[in-house]
Length: 165
Ligand SMILES: [Fe+2]
Ligand SMILES: [Fe+2]
Image 1 (cartoon, rainbow, N blue to C red):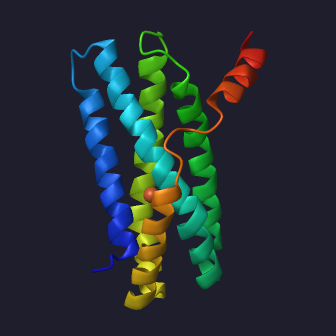
Image 2: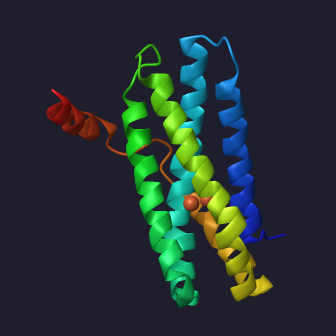
């Protein structure tokens, strides 16, 4: 049974929210926090990949009226990508680790909220059931080839060090 693209993306969002809740629990060791952040980075890397590679370009093509929403989404993902790359090379004992994770979570929560409340309903209205199912298939295929970790974190770290130091 194939899956509707929006249902699939919302399930991803729920997984992400579950990890955010886990991170916010009190009294965790740096090792525990590191583990949760590693999971968050993996979930976000895969989710961003399938949205950027499949969902956004296809919606842009099929529903030109949603162009502005798509462009805004790319920018929001870009901000999250930068934070993810920074976190990927940061140690959980770093004094900025919690703060950076919190900023990442706030950004992603805002973005997921916007997708679910504003963007997805417009997509559902504009596309038929069959199209959404086909898009769901494409998303599942993309998941198989998606990267699991933020790409080129070491190059990013060098760039940050060059600016900060
Ligand atoms: Fe998104
Ligand atoms: Fe999303």
